Image (cartoon, rainbow, N blue to C red):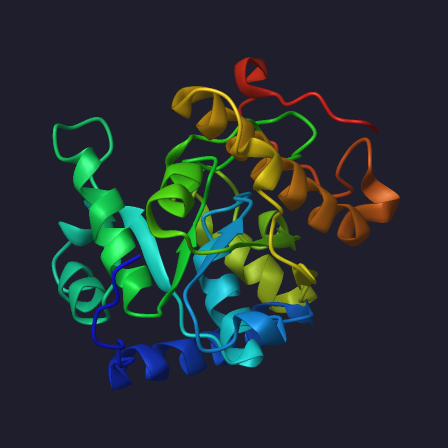
Length: 257
């Protein structure tokens, strides 16, 4: 991977990360386990996390601030087209992903460039809020694996659990009611950073396409394993049911229960 000048975190992004912790404190009891492994400190890293609620980015911001990480998010192009928020996203160095357009391929070189500048890049490999009926990570898209292959950066799994108790899938519809309930009950929300990056060496054999698919499965399996300790008492069905969430069996991953 060719190196670029080391990225300097914008002050605005540092402020927003700190502000996220304040916001989360009012709505939830955040528990963060682990952080960036010592061998990854100061270098590029891909943070790959599961996606269960529209509130996930705020929780991840708060958890990363606590862990001393200032990640650059890969986010849908719609966010960048929003007035004010789009300007903030660009200023803070986040990476635009124009899904279902001719420009979607531009995201990978942009992410590789960010990683070459020793950035931490955060991505949701599922590509959407997962719709697995049991809320386990569903089959991932191949973009995260291709990003790792293109950049050579390690992939660190990050798991989060409980954000669906703050903001449901259907938000912003009925978001006010959900946020008021969270303000009154402050549900426990957990984030866990894996101890080690994903070992992608088993995916170094076969055709390029087969390697990418194998690496994608390894990444999703690692996120699954990182999530398991957070929901020991909810292995089959979540304790909090998000009734607004549709179910999609087409991307359910086989896993050992």
